[in-house]
Picture 1 (cartoon, helix red, strand yellow):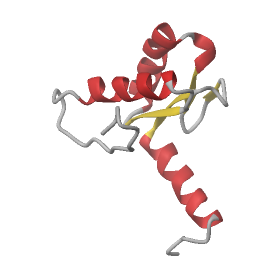
Picture 2 (cartoon, helix red, strand yellow):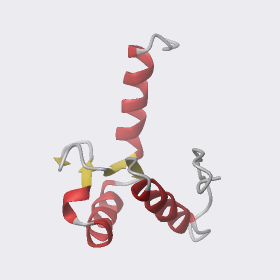
Picture 3 (cartoon, rainbow, N blue to C red):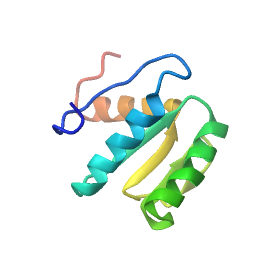
Picture 4 (cartoon, rainbow, N blue to C red):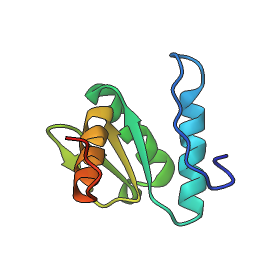
Length: 101
């Protein structure tokens, strides 16, 4: 599905291989000139993945967004906590008139 250009949501237990799927999706998006978002449940994990992905994709291409910090805003790949992603999605849905509030 990812290589066909479709969006996917991966939810699996620790050690099941989510990271491999996520990194493959980022590579696929990056090669096609698209942006990507990589989420983690904890700020510490986001910070760790931010460092790792900067080594893979280059520091200019990777940004970080946590509840209290934003680095390289507008980068092609953004690492963020699921909380930040959820808030972005809620704001976007409210802007588009699809909020259920």
